[in-house]
View (tube, rainbow, N blue to C red):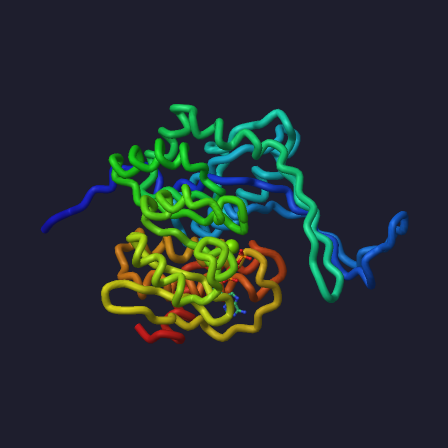
Length: 315
Ligand SMILES: Nc1ncnc2c1ncn2[C@@H]1O[C@H](COP(=O)(O)OP(=O)(O)OP(=O)(O)O)[C@@H](O)[C@H]1O
Ligand SMILES: [Mg+2]
């Protein structure tokens, strides 16, 4: 009997921007200049797509290393909170500018964000450090949750490929990155490029999901996967274009659903699943994430994920 020995120390390295989120909600109205309004609720939580996806993967039982920068004064808080999800601090570096910070302000109608990049400004430089590259190479899969600069991608992706790592990229709503055609080469070189519908329309210049599938095919992307919110996700390959529907859940807060989707997809990729089954697992993880406030609270454990997956798609 053939026994495969996994020589890598980590299943996944997740690299990207890390934030301290301050979430103010329940304002009756937006204040006028010089006015003060009171929030009904306030929450301080770890944030950033990299944190959300790393916590999602660790919850699913994957040995996950989070690689990024925070400010020294937040070390204990991050260590405690990441520890709740089983994510350690050994991939974290300390930046001089303090932790990146986002203030989110919600009224009943709308939500606005104020962001300070902080230590995240050093992320591209961090990815030039040989020991950091060694951290990535030590994982079976590397996920980038950041607008990965073209020069950086051109340098790092071949190294990861040569080391046998599979890769994925979620640039988030980085309009400049998405509008810049020099990044199309990165979309081709990454194993799984993971945009949502709005991001795909910035990339392709058309907000039709089929237009993205056509673009992806013409560009020769390795996989075509497009997140479509409550509708699920679109996939396309030689067998055609199809929608994988999302499970019906009572969605309370969709923050981080896309990052949870990424975690579910990577988890299935590591199991060697087919594209459709990878995206099914992704959709279930994304859907479950929406069932509680915040991006982290409802990240599923494997039995919850498995149960809803089987109920939705059969075995
Ligand atoms: N209301 C919902 N009901 C069921 N599933 C949902 C819902 N919203 C999101 N999902 C699931 O989560 C996945 C990702 O959601 P979405 O398309 O909103 O990503 P996103 O816009 O990148 O999210 P994020 O806010 O994290 O960036 C969807 O493909 C779907 O599977
Ligand atoms: Mg997203």
